[in-house]
Image (tube, rainbow, N blue to C red; front, side, top):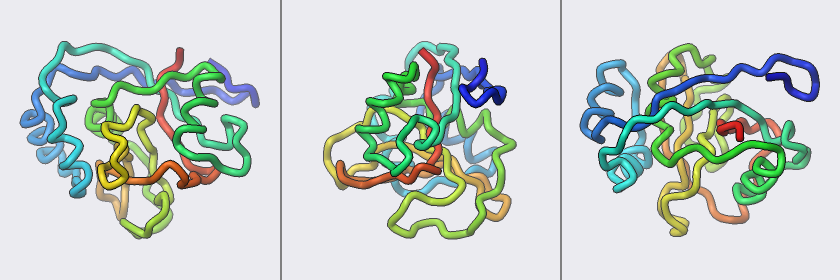
Length: 172
């Protein structure tokens, strides 16, 4: 695949499903991947009840590449992504993507929580598990000081992601 700017686009093939939440937590832990409390909350959700494994493709885009040059809300990002040929990932994609992406670049800063989208994070574009603002909306992957993280994030319907914020989608 090629992006409109002519650069090659890397598509990552990924197996999702087929593991229990306990198996996922064990595998993440055995690889030294850290979780925040929001990721733990998400992993406790029924979406992680065992299901058949499936292969999906993942592609990264930042908000600006979707044409949203001044930023956008999560719902706006998802709507425009769909118009541009991208689908949301399955809700359980985050842990499997973290396990598959061992070579993610180190974040440019070590700040873990600042009330904003963290630098160097790759958000997994998936339908929120809950409309409750207090419940995490999804996962993001980040490497801080050489340490891999799978973190959950919260935001309300008005939060604006910046044009540089990156999301993982499935190509349609």
